[in-house]
Length: 606
Picture (cartoon, rainbow, N blue to C red):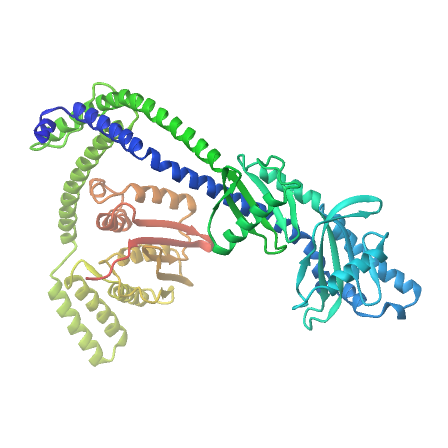
């Protein structure tokens, strides 16, 4: 029943029905999974809390990492390391003063360029260096007491103290102190103790900037001794609330131990969702908590808004679908009519009363019309090519004599010359015999090695004909001789190089053939040093060769035979076999060198 209804109605009604069915299905699915989505959105909020914890942890790590560069100055500053290594008491006062200034300038430069560092101090075995000059004695005793109370399992270990209040140069600070040993790079021998006081208030400021993304949740940081930070907009006040602090700490400890993402805790009558991250450097717990009622409330509001939005979009898309159905159906009807009319006749483009809109269907019709034009043009070119091919074959017959008779006669001449000891005649007749054999045997497609051998035989005859006028050179890239190419491409170009390129040359002439591959092309370059062509003439010929095809070359009457069956013949044969992207290109190079480049497609001989 449904299938018959679909088949009976128009495309426009089918599209309208499909759009309505799809939108209604989306609305039903959304309503069915409405309540199930609450949990997913809640999990997204929990993931946001976890990401914020990680951001706070990364912020704390970044703040603590920057002062650690003071740990490594002695590793790359030899003078700095030497001062810490040697006994300062053995130096004269001037030397001691100079060394003290050097060390303190180094740590002051590093400390003062870091906005989080308040004071940096080095306690060597016989000297104290500090970026702050007051209260050093009491400070040294305090640091030494902390160092003595720690088990140093490694000289590279770094520890962080609890947060405490102190006075530095008459200013009250709340600080966190980083303590570590300075040591030799290779032997790990201690050179002294480094203590860096970090401004904890600025750490809290950095936490507050990150806490702006908390979306109503509270953030607290606990050290071993207790609460060290809570966000300003926390829903719970943790100050002077030891029981509440203990609830959060125990919940975080269990969560970190179990490796879960979140944990539910109960504070009074309200339930909270808790997430926690451990900072490895300080051992602090970074805790974030939010009321579950807030989580569900925001999730419900978001879903309700989405439901209203989808309902509104349903009616909007209903109207849009009607317009789209009307827009699509007309071009399809035109295409169907055109294809039906072209079944038993020549391909014809789709007639248009007015220009189509610049959209997908309009471009489909435009592309169809262009495709029809290309197909018709290709058919015409194919017909012209076949006609031209027959003309060229007929024309080539004018220049042929009985090849088998000539081939046998040349073999007789070669044998007589060999008996009489006339090597030059033997060589020339042998080369000509191979050329004739190459002409009458085999297919139109040969290996590169066969075409090169025919070129060598042709040049051998010409060097005998024109002794001492020119020499030849061949460069053949390894591996290309087995590739395939059309027959008799090189001989007309070599003939052109001798009769035109070296026409006025009496000695010192050169003719070369280079064969190599470049990307997906087989390149053959025939060059001579006759200097018979300049860049303007080369450009003129390149324009002729660019527009030449196998179908139009034979329709033109050239001024001389070289133009009719020479370069243009070769160019047309290459384009006829490989396509118009291939062919000849002429280059007037420096030093009077003329290069004719053959661009062929790389193919293996089947």
